[in-house]
Image (cartoon, rainbow, N blue to C red; front, side, top):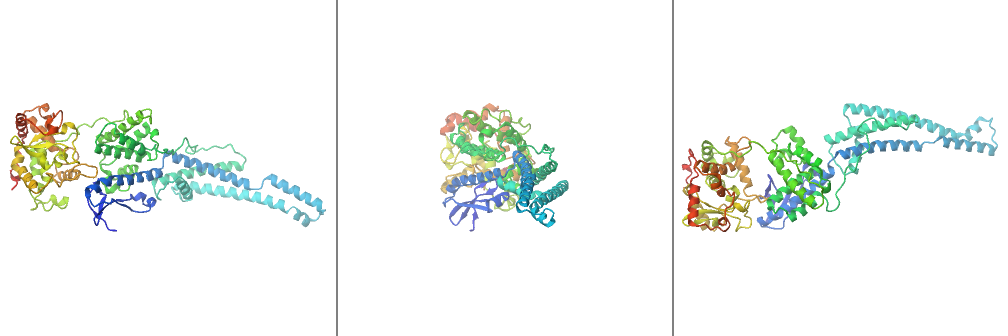
Length: 610
């Protein structure tokens, strides 16, 4: 079956594929699970030829597969309790096998009974005890038993001594061949699978060797009749508690989270809820997706937070970490040294889990919220930076705005050429610069959202109309006059052309990803574009620098924050934002405010649309 990639991304992996006219969900099985799943790729028909419908159906399928992977990893994850259990079981099983061997050997009672039987036979048969051959024949069974007992004891003692010597020699060299079969047996019994050479597997093997060494020492003591010996190696001790307690029906983290999501107690947006689902999914991957929700503890959260601080940025998008579990990713990043997520992002994960745990407390699953007090202090100096006039000139004289080699691939956008890009990639930064609007708000604008009111062109930021439109909050609904510089650049001309062509959106090329985020791909591309221009080096600069620049421009013009915060979608925007109607006098004041956004030293005269 041949598939064609067709968009719909989560991270950088593309999961939506099309074969002929039908869309499919298609996902590569993580490399560490291929041997368990039995295939390298999962495919499922979405039974539709409509791309929008396919995207809506895609996420539940991908989420289901990811949960299956998490559950497999949870079954495979070797906890401290598992190791403790494996060591103690191997020690006690080794001693039990030794005792079973001893029980199989003839005892002195067996020999005495055989002797009595031989004497009775001699007496009954009247055998002449002076005849050596006759006497030997009568006592043959006794002799066999005696020889077997003495011989077996000697052989067993030599075998134990040799085994003990070999185990100690192999342990000192880090070799595990002598114990591999025992490791395999434990892993199979507990549905734990590790590839040969795994550090966790090697560590388990070494501990089992130490357990067997202790068992052999006890066996040697028993040869002398001493059954009082106890393990001297500190790792050989009875397993405490239930190392792998599994959730009952409806009590796993994933199952209970879906109850929480259905109730949505905080009435958050679908995208926020999906983000929480991913954050808590990472926690479930850490503790195991079959972990009972009632057992979530401070210790769980503390250890998870410690690993989050070492978790690489966009790990799911990097080929370096493909196929790795949460903990494997952290371990591997210690070697490759990718940048790690910020304390702010760590706090977002903790916030998602904390909100879920508050609901668990209120519904009787937990007695207290284990996330309370766990958040990190806020980052210092982590705010978004604004572009200088020099940086803005570099940006707006770059190929994306003046002509590039091709717009087919990101690398061609950075190369000068004759291809003029005039879609959302061109317009969104400019509109942000002269309005302070958010990129998602601009990308979703409908043709009817850009219109004339009282002789002035306005942008209506709203979630009315298209069912996929959204705003950050109620205050984000607002009316923004179109800046005079955007009029000069030809934004209204674009609007007229698209309207005449029957388009319903101002930027039809701007897409949402499978999470519902508007222009996430553009955000990623533009961040790399800034790096290519040597403007971005680490955190600080992004497309949001245009939005912050608009606020700084209004401050330079003498306005106080409270006088223009409604333009940014902060504070009360009144009912004008909701209904799209505004009195002429109020609109004129807003026009004055918007046109006060200026950038001394900025030169974009060359951008006038032909």
